[in-house]
Picture 1: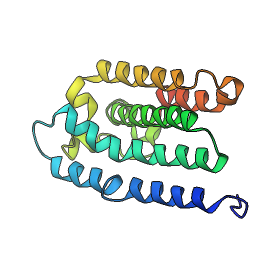
Picture 2: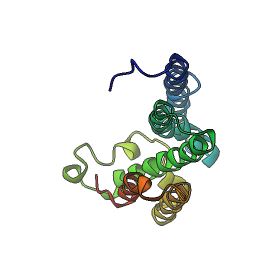
Picture 3: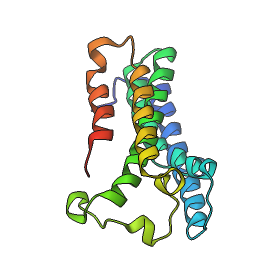
Length: 169
């Protein structure tokens, strides 16, 4: 996609969003807490949410909001789509944690059980498998609720949200 016709203020806003998403206030900060939490016997839900809101959810949020800004959506729509992205980001991570326990290496396409061996804090280690699945589904429902009012334009985003909890890899 070319950006020659996109106003510079939008481009600068996107650069700032991407920088925040990968920097100390985003991915880097989440990764630091993630690494510090490895091997600890008790990691609270608040810490786990911090890690993944600053890693997986932050990257999905940056992707969605960047597209919204390029498209010139209203502030109200941007806020709803930002919430959508935050919800699917966290749901994605919860499902990833569940699959690390329940899926085979062949299904995942990567080493299964890696989180457990690395003694990483995961949602199933805090909530258990069933509660983790329910929480992921609830987040997807919240994400889809943010899309109310978008009509058919939301169909691809709804499909992405549904895929997150249906995926097997």
